[in-house]
Image (cartoon, rainbow, N blue to C red):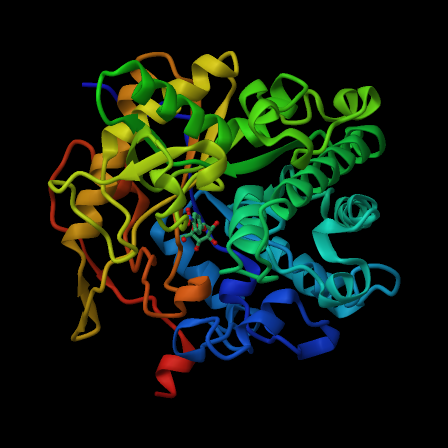
Length: 462
Ligand code: PNW
């Protein structure tokens, strides 16, 4: 019935630390993820991104695979410590050259680069010397780094994403401590988030003032899972709405409305930093598009203090602050992340964004699933992944047909890679599928068995 529009952007995504390897090659400085993953107990089986998919050396081959798949756009990130080994000051020319070559190679293959400036690999020196995202000058350091990237790549890159998932940096990095820099606090997440928003805004202001002639687009990518009220009771309805505000409006409201949501101000008091009038103006309107990473759905119910006892991993914030109790339906299928497969949640998420932020152009910059698939004769029977993509793409199509301005979709991920604290066991890779098939998935039920693209050197070496 309905079809994706002709100009819909079909892409796939990765991030630097998860695929590049070459952690100490050609002058790259260490990042907080190099440090964090080397601490015993932080990453499953003690794995690290030191080698990962060796994309740093094999990028040409990877781009050929993308081309064969029919990928039209490729979202990757720049490793800040590869171009600025200590985060500020001395520039590493070989790092700049790598990304310049990568961009040229993509353009040669007719693949449009979408570049993320920060996907969590902060230069370690900035953490050690300046307290990372908690420090007073971090927003300026980030803006200076962004400026360098616009200057060197902006002639060829027309799609920029400042930050990937500041929620994860704040909550998993500074609240629960399960991701780098491994801090545990109930106030630091709010300070880190505040500085992340200022960093984003300063980078966008520089891009618009200094590089307007490059005629590109710039935005931010936030992650949010859908929160469905557990019952029709008004306190559960309110809990679900509150959970979405603590998860997504935390970051999107300052950009689209000029300040944090009232419910956060009320509940957090002095733990939530305040924006000055000048800062509110600086941040307002700093996204040309709404970048969304979406993976799953949970039921939300009024917390009644129960949320204090439950694990906050996967919660949309610090649970005791929201007072929301989360749960899954027993009938929902789970991926190997234990994330439930709920396509209708994706559609509701898109419609919520559409309504709250006045119909912005939306790009899903990540959606995908991990499954413990097996390689048999160099192939993978990937039926569950096929079903996942069919379900979520159908939900996207439904949202579009109801007026949501969804402009593109990036599958996470191009290939299996370093899945952060979960190491290499969690496999999000597309393996091999041609994008015409991906586009047809909502309509067809063809079995999709692909050629293996997993190239984790750690695994290859046993
Ligand atoms: C995103 N959560 O991470 C990242 O952008 C990717 O780098 C990552 O590989 C992908 O999703 C799959 O995990 C997230 O706990 C990590 O809610 C954790 C959460 C969400 C996103």
